[in-house]
Length: 137
Image 1 (cartoon, rainbow, N blue to C red):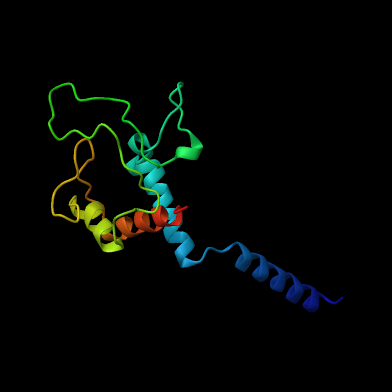
Image 2 (image 1 turned 180 degrees about the horizontal axis):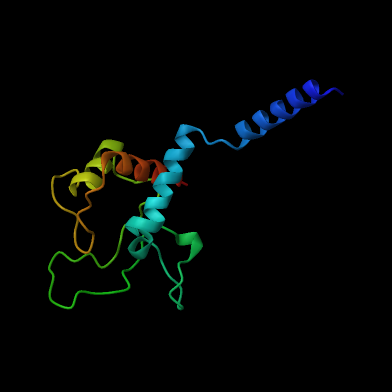
């Protein structure tokens, strides 16, 4: 095989391999959302059940759980159990984006403590929504 044909074959194989490993824009958004949920926002801290050693139980990841801590002073609105967030049940995409960008639930109220009032960018909020929706079972 001459050098030109060999070079063309190598370039074709490289292009095919690159395309096979490239993420679609949707995959990239979901990956960004996963990164935010798992490494920045820390959703699993409250929304995932843990075993006796304090490790997250993989089968119950983001499925809601009793909170492993309590307030040190009386807090009337305290939520002792977190809700499941896999698939974002009860929220439209726009309602979830509002929750993550403005800290407001669909009824206009803030989430109950200890849920923080998030202020993500719209792009990050949409990535979080895409990731949590992708987990729907």
